Length: 308
Image 1 (cartoon, rainbow, N blue to C red):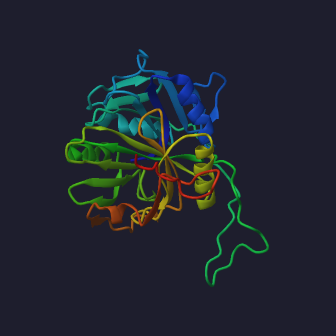
Image 2 (image 1 turned 90 degrees about the vertical axis):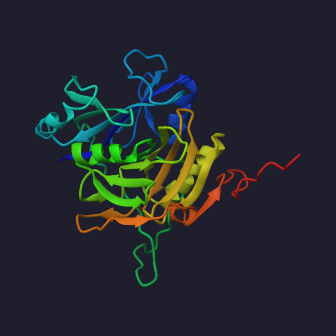
Image 3 (image 1 turned 30 degrees about the horizontal axis):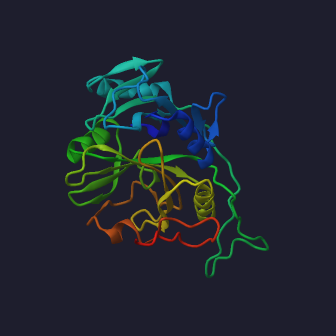
């Protein structure tokens, strides 16, 4: 199989202007109409009214992701997926893309990727016995500029069925697993730790958990999070570090539903990687994290409101 990454996310929302402001504050580049936004690579986020007729039905109530597009390298790769996709619910061809619905109720498209390669200067880190940054300070970021859309996380009601779809229909690989609770999946044998995370929780209906964007380094994770605080967007949790993927993160609550995440330093896996089976716990989710984020004015953890 040949899925190479996330191409586009389409949201249905009740306040287009508020959501557009969030996207631009988050560091995405707006088009002329401020309805579509791009990462540096050209991965896109599009906003539509909740009742937009061109959007598929929502898989949960309220503001949420309505359609998710995945990219392949070529038309031949797309055609190779057609027989499997044609057997799925809601299959159709739209403008050269193939569309269907996954078992969790999410509408997805597969298309030839339109993204571009991104070359950036990233200052190295200095570790004991391995000094790579010489006579140069580490950067300080006033805001983030997301490079691409790295992964999406969904709550699911039938984990086995949804995992089966992404593995057997789209060819995803298992990276790691929380026993009887969740699975981390990547598009192919080689790549970042996960492009998709499926999480089944007791009494939690299907829905969007968060969308994650790659940035250069931990300094940009922190600079982006503090900049969002300055713009009065609330932090869900972060900065912090996931031990299961090694990634540094910062989650910001999004008016589109769920959260948007800055992250960097995730593990890079190959076909030699052996998936682990771990217990789902606070310790496996976060090695450390700052609850509520860092306040822009004090550069300290935000204070909780005092009890009345």
